Image 1 (spheres, rainbow, N blue to C red):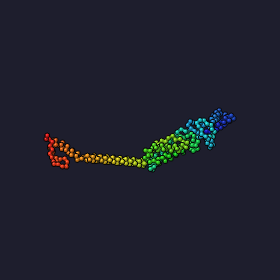
Image 2 (cartoon, rainbow, N blue to C red; image 1 turned 135 degrees about the vertical axis):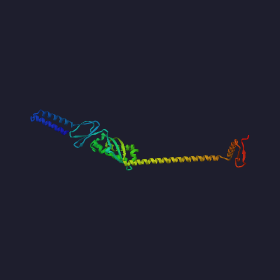
Image 3 (cartoon, rainbow, N blue to C red; image 1 turned 90 degrees about the vertical axis):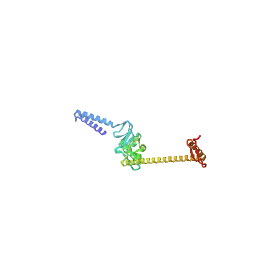
Image 4 (cartoon, rainbow, N blue to C red; image 1 turned 45 degrees about the vertical axis):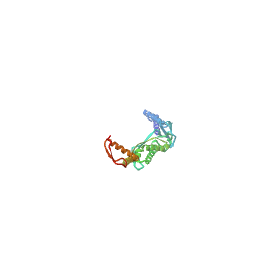
Amino acid sequence: MLYLSVLLLLAGVVLLVLRRRRVVDSLAATVSGVVCALVGLVLGLTTLVHVVAPYEVAVPTTLGKVGGTWKPGLHLKSPLTGVTTFSTRPADLDLTGKDTVEVRSSEGGVLYADLTVKWSIDPQHTLALYRLAGSADAVQQRLVYPDTREIVRNVFARHTGVEGYSSQREAISAEIERLVTARLAPRGILVNGVNLRNVKPSDSLQHAIDQKIQQDQATAQAEAAVRTAKAEAEKRKIDSESTAAANRAIADSLTDRMLMSQCIDAFKAAAEKNPVYASPCGSVGSPVIVDGTKR
């Protein structure tokens, strides 16, 4: 912009001088000279100011020397000063598609993780980030991108394939967010969230997972059958013990006098309808005829 303004300004001055010395008599040359001079002057003035937009922070550099950070607003500068702008708005790093992270579980199985990292620049650390990366795009490519991929691989390496694919996905996502935040915060990068969008196992790992699920189901069924058999055996044991205890109680209660009394009562009940020929109750005596029908 500076060089263009100087060229236009020189061209306008040359045209006006030539017109004044009557080297060129055309009115168009005068008009062209005036326009070029004005445009060059305006462009030259724009190189002396810089406007920092809202939600941005700028870092000026003059002939290789880095200045302080500029906040939003109008700033005066030298025509030789370059300005690098950093946005403080949240940005998304999408690790999907060709950037999907290939990870390995603790068992060696391969999974493919899709995630999004929401990050932003801390305005207080803009100068340090400029020295580290040089621009906002470089901050993402040189700092956020490689560190996130490294942490994702390390976290999944501590979990099994089944945990990474299904049972521990929320815990893994929370652990990744915690570690990424801890890694980037000292550099002036704020992590606003990590969304583990999808975890897909490789074909070989999916086959292994399916086999493990089937084995777990078979094991669970076998354990249930064992528990059922144990419960039935315990029930039969309890029933037999109860029956034996009842029989012992009955046997203990059947004394000779009680048996004699029950025998006499039985004969009486039978003799009320028909004569009964029976041995007497007890161990001694002769058989008798009991006829309860005669009054």
